[in-house]
Length: 367
Image (cartoon, rainbow, N blue to C red; front, side):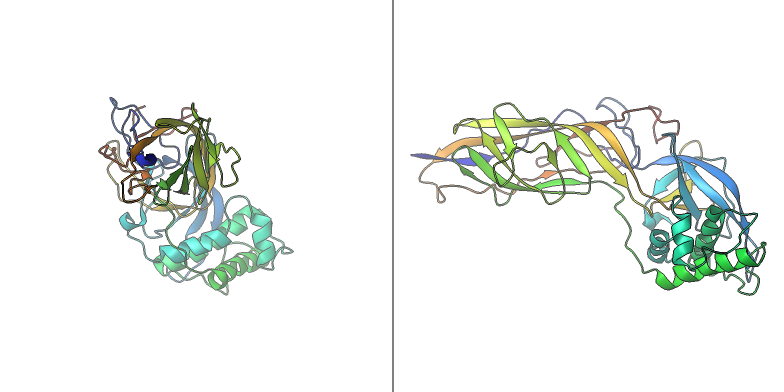
């Protein structure tokens, strides 16, 4: 008498494991590895000059052109350092940023102006009715948010009696936004610098032609796929599924209860770059340059064409085995993101990620 047990669980796809952040381009195995992280060029728009205890900086409205036709709102997090606006700015984790209180800064960003919500922020701060001519609501919301950030990152203090270059309404509105954000914001941990995709197979067993359960852990928004040959990916109710999301449970239902395997190839991946990602200026060789560090104020989603192949193999084992239905022996499907790629080892799926469209910015490679 024989019973089935999962064996192996993975067949590595061709390619090199590459990091994915922002709009990182992925490359084939024989090309140069792509560093992890997004990059872009700085865009400036006029802002409001602020009055403070040590200096009177202008809250120039900064954006980062990430090469996809959109400009994302960013803020300065080093008031004493000049802006290198002619250089590409590359993403770096918080550990590489010489700035304190970044968790509080992210708390401010999540409540502050993100490039889209000026009216809502002025309403929340109680100053939606103020006369702010000749400035716009966007400039006021940005200036108040920048003032709060500089207080946290540089110890700079806005002058309460005369906070801006503007008239009384502008003074009142900018100061109110600043005060609201300082009072309401709580520290928030660094967002994920790298995406991940893991499948927990520790509870998976075989039951006739059905194998599972498997549980997905990922920070991808979703990952879609086509049903494989010889099997169907189903949920706990037996209904077919065509996408994976975080904490999703799924099973593999083979067409027949026999020694078999299934290869699953994904279609697209949707990944959201969260607010709070930090950027530094770099030279032509990609080395960090002294200059203002910037922090992303808005999250944005990007879709990628992608291929992830993994193989689940079911084979028969002798009935004298200690357990008639053996659990999976700990191998997991793990997305390992690393700069420059990673060694392909058991338990690792190689992902070949290809951008849907070319970006104008330099994403860490010449591709």
